[in-house]
Amino acid sequence: METLSPFGDVDTTTYRRQHGIAEQVSMTGDDWLSERDQKSQARADAAVKRSGAAAAKKLEAAAEAVNEFLHACLDAGHDDIRGAADGRRVLISNIMEYASYLDGKYGSKT
Image 1 (cartoon, rainbow, N blue to C red):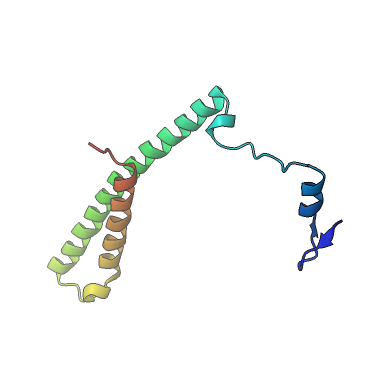
Image 2: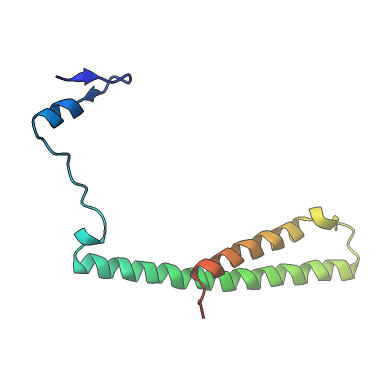
């Protein structure tokens, strides 16, 4: 007998159990992947690791460039420096934080 759930969906759990109808097996995980699919996934994972490590290095270089720009502005006596709230300092901090995350996750673990 089918019953309605509070959301209006038909609940067939009892019927399936009484008549021996098995639930559909989910075909996921490494057990169900072909060798070709496994190699393809390994290549994709390797590409993510390579690009993550490269992005971390480039982000660190970008943070250094912004830092040099900030110091040049300080040396030139520009009055638009606002201390810790300066957007350049916030940007440097955020870039370094994300670069550190990428390096920790995808960088070389030697």
